[in-house]
Image (cartoon, rainbow, N blue to C red):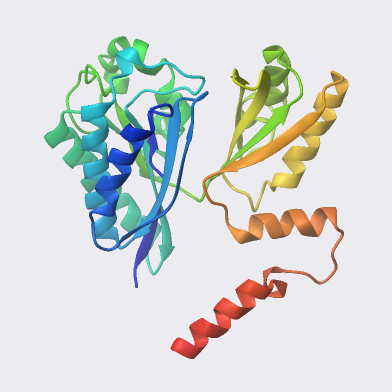
Length: 304
């Protein structure tokens, strides 16, 4: 079986009925499996994790983007997380018997269809990017929805697909093939956003931190605390425990404790195995030592 994964992000985290309507578009498509979805009212954002055969995933993502266009109006949207579109970003990740090149081609087909049929400007990013300036999602998103009308008319920011004007309610969307990403957040026992911003700056690559970390400081208004919110773009080369330890060290400088952490969506098993191996100082341990994985491997072999 050929499988790819997609983790579309939608700029709605408060109205559960809206998210259900968007997710239902994926439920209607045979060959698509919804692995997880979650919403954050502070970020005002929802993340859905899908896997399935490429053709089915393509159809589901188009239909979800169309539904988001109809139900989300960014003129009335606010939240802690930066955003530029109702469907903000659509990443594509090869999982089983598929390649990066296939995901790149899929991103182009999907992007062209969104641009042509939904009149939403589309930017290809990461491995699908058409220029070095478009590799980084944060670089494309800079200025966000409110400032995109003046950005999109610049020759350097002409969309890859769709009209050269921002959709009045749905904004623009980024589509692209990328490596597996872990959304990892660390919550701090303070309401001082400056502390979260300083720690985020210490760990993110663009300001001198870890090569495979993107980070921002956010307020969690309902809990009256702040958060260092991160995208770990390569957990093999920058493991979770290493970044966590630096955040802990930096927080201690300000007399602030870590009160918790979270992973948004799903994570590869190996990322957590690496954490266990590090903190427990396990010797001769890897994912094959995990009972459930051994059972699944055995069942898989028996079914061949």
